[in-house]
Image (tube, rainbow, N blue to C red; front, side, top):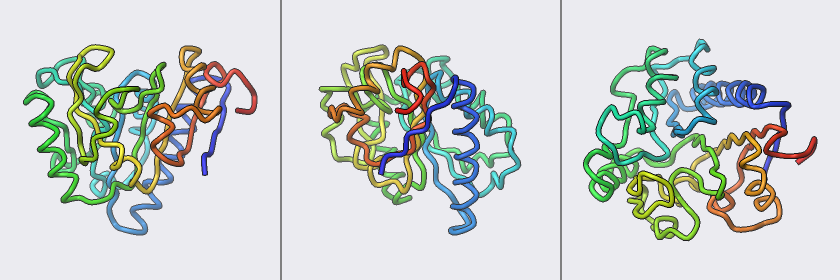
Amino acid sequence: MEAFRVFADAEAAAQAAADFLAAQLIACINEKQVCHVALPGGTTPARCLQLLSARELPWNKIHWYLGDERCAPLGHEQRNDSMIAQQLWSRIQAPPENIHPIAAELGAELAAEKYAELLNRVGMLDIVVLGMGEDGHTASLFPGNAAIEDRRAAVPVFEAPKPPAERVSLGLETIRAAVQRIIIVTGTGKREALAQVKRGVQLPVSRIGPSYWFVDKAAADSDNI
């Protein structure tokens, strides 16, 4: 079942998403003693991760993965792991062995192959946190791109409609198989895509399965989405 929550602004949405994510991490650890979480890149989720970093959580029991990565050199400012390291990993006591970046510097095909091997060993992810683009893409699964039909655990992405053209993404099946999906959407630029999701248009983000949505009014254009 979809759960949409609308907040006054982007800051309130980020705070609520951080609260919810922290609670889900604790619940998962209490049940399984470990939690496997995939994180998004992009500017919208960055504040949520920064707020999460201020929490007192059993960081040594959380394993971190990426929802997608851009094929750029290691340490490049465009890489999602650069943002996540800045906003979260560098601020918490995360054991290095618990951080699982995508080696996108190797190129999309090889990096996806290696990440798929890792994910297949791990099995089902517990939580996948995602954003949504103005075209309804999520992770690096874009409308009309062949990657969205690729059934591997992690997939190479070519000819992405926004740079860089080559990326690596969790496969649609991996996202759908996760125990929980959390989507953070803010800003007027996302309004039309969100309206399409509500109308049942099969955008990539519509295909990932039931999710918890944290949305600001600018994106929702309504008090009640």
